[in-house]
Image 1 (cartoon, helix red, strand yellow):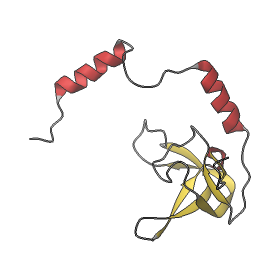
Image 2: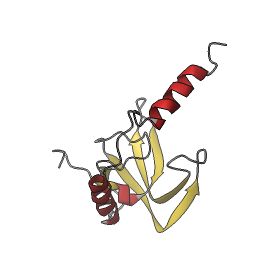
Image 3: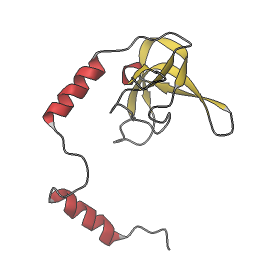
Image 4: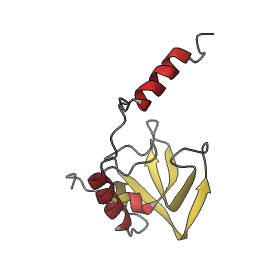
Length: 126
């Protein structure tokens, strides 16, 4: 029973959200416009390029912000995927590249991502 949802916590969170007291970041119009512009700039990569997330564009937990991953495949056309529960940011995600990373055990893992959320990785963080 220790794993049951605490209804008091759920109601408290809903009340905070309704009172605009939720710790979620505010939807600042200037920030949204700048992120839209950055997203729409697009990105063009080649197989073998090292890439990482653009700031504020990560919609997956992996790869980690700032860590490089390598482009292993480019898709000729963007593809819409259906993954995760509806309502999640990645439910109808658009993918256009496959990237690879090494996990903590050294295993090579690949992920499908939207290239417009990525930028070329640089060693000095530029």
